Structures are given as C-alpha cells and as structure tokens.
Length: 264
Figure 1: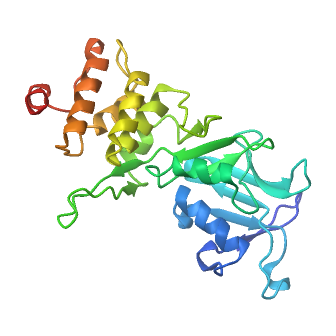
Figure 2: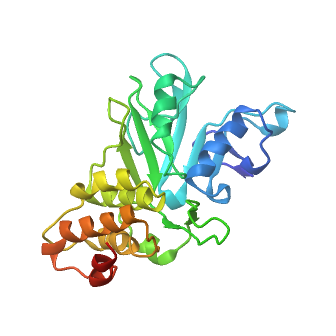
C-alpha cells in the first residue's frame, strides 16, 4: 500500500505477516506481535519495495493506533539506526546480539507475554506492556496452566483504561520491575497472580493498598482479580492480604471475603 503526502516523501506499507524468517523484518514483526495483533500494526518505509527485489526495505516508521504508539527510525548517538519511541523520549528497541543485561531483564517478563524491552542510550531498560484484558482459561488436562489469552478487542476494558500501555523501569539490580503508578502496580499484580507467581504478586500488594476508592481504571483491574478461581493456599493468602490492604477504602470486593477467609 502506498501513501503520499505532497509535503513529505512517499511512504509504502510493509506486510509484516509475510516477513521472511531470519530477516530483520521478521525479527521486528515478532517483537511487535507481542504488543499488538499484526493486523493493527502499520509498518512504513520510504523505499519503494518494488525497486528492492528480494531485499527487504528498511522500516522507517511504525504505528500502533490502538495503543497510541509510534516509533521512528533514526541513528542514535553511536550512529546505529534504531526504532525510537515518539511517545517515550529516549527509548528505543534494542539492536544487536542479546546481552547478559537484557537476558536477565527478559526473565522478569515471564508472566508478561505481551511485553517488549526498550532501552535508553545508556542501556537502562524498560518493559512496555499494553493494558489489555487478560484471561486464564481453564484447561482440564493441565489444571495448573498459566496460559493467558489476551482479549485485545474488549471494548469495555479499552474504554475504561486511561492508559493504553504501562511502562515499567527495570531496577538497576535487574531483579524486579518498578511500577510508577497504582494502576501499573495493580496490572502487574494481576499478571503475576494469574501466572501463579504468588511470591511476586505478594510483593506488589503493598503498592496497591489504599484507604480511598480506586479510580475507574484501577477498579476494573482490581475487580478482575476475582475473575479466576485458584484454591492454592498461597493464592488464598494473597487474597487475604489484598483484602486487608484495601479494607478501609469502602470498595466492593471481587470475592466473597467470608468464603476465602474460611478456605485460608
């Protein structure tokens, strides 16, 4: 597809779905597919693909309209061309071989399948995570499954969400993600809990405690904590801990407090 603006160089849309395996375009498509369905990703080049033959043209612009994200390709201070975020200053997709630093940070994303790592020019790392509705379907053959289904098109969730994405700085120790807002902490708590990482979830509960009612976007995440059944003792302990953390807020709980207290 060709887009032309009389004031700018023409842009050509690339089909990421058919990127050839092993190419830089395929690697980019795999990364972007973690954030969004490729049908909702617009990748543009200023080079006419018809003139390239079998060689993939460079990607000059990437737009993810539903997530309100844009990335532009430009050289960094080191002269290396990267895709830089327009929305988050000084953050870009890492390039080159995996480093130990990035490999360690990637381990923190085990419960966050729809995340990507971005970095600054000083290699400070951040996890970019779309705020979409996660579900953990019951699998009879695997009762302790942690498989998540991401309902990216859920209109109720998307309309209530104030932030289409969350950005989590990776702590300098590479041992945990930092949540800068209560909504971000709630969402990470939800994902850790659904992944049955009860210890990781428990560490986040102090960050979501409050004595006032949540905002609507925060409450929908809080309410979703009660959407999955989990009888594991550690899960019951997390439920009790969250109940105490928001006990003075006067909010409706997403679970039966008496039932969970009895189970615990």
